[in-house]
Image 1 (cartoon, rainbow over the protein chains, first blue to last red):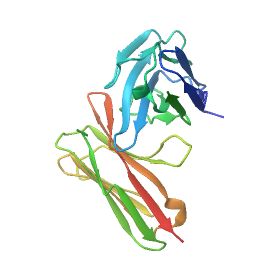
Image 2: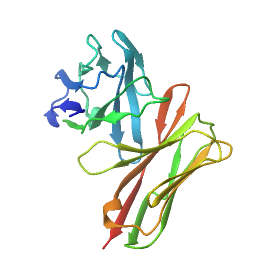
Image 3: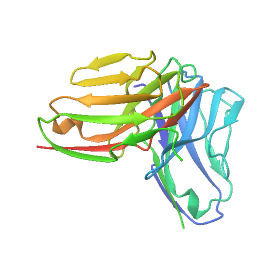
Image 4: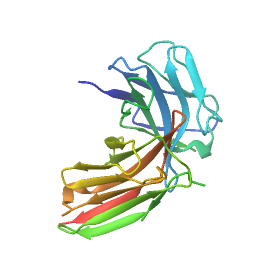
Length: 114
Length: 109
């Protein structure tokens, strides 16, 4: 089944403890992206990747890192999480960018930082 | 400040009624996408409109892109409880996608 898989689905952590949220897609998509969703603010893009070894900042990249060593994986790294990074995170992918191919989203990771 | 403003924020209607959700911006977009998101899941693309003035129909859902490509609307005819969800519009510009805050639609049986 074609899908975007995020892990974990739920994560509670403490301030400053490094964490990684994994994202994997099995559709051979070139484009991958991370979003955070907060009430009243909608989805905001954190980072995106047009292809392997190519990553770019989105609208809210502060406090996050990503890597794209393989086409299928795009992990999101929080080196020193803070409470304002408590949010619902979504990974998404598309065949080639977002202009002419639809975004496929994972089911989300709910992160709480205390 | 949201690049895309959606209204209303919440909408609760009875089964069989019609509803319209609006998505407005002062910016021009190359295309406009509509997604529906259900609790515990990621957004799912409903439609993409790319031409100013374009109207697309998907069963009981009608999507319209404004002539100036700055705004869009989603109209649902004879809403059903299965239409309940969060509806998100997203505008694409310079290969970047910006989302509205969403409209939560509840259809009561």
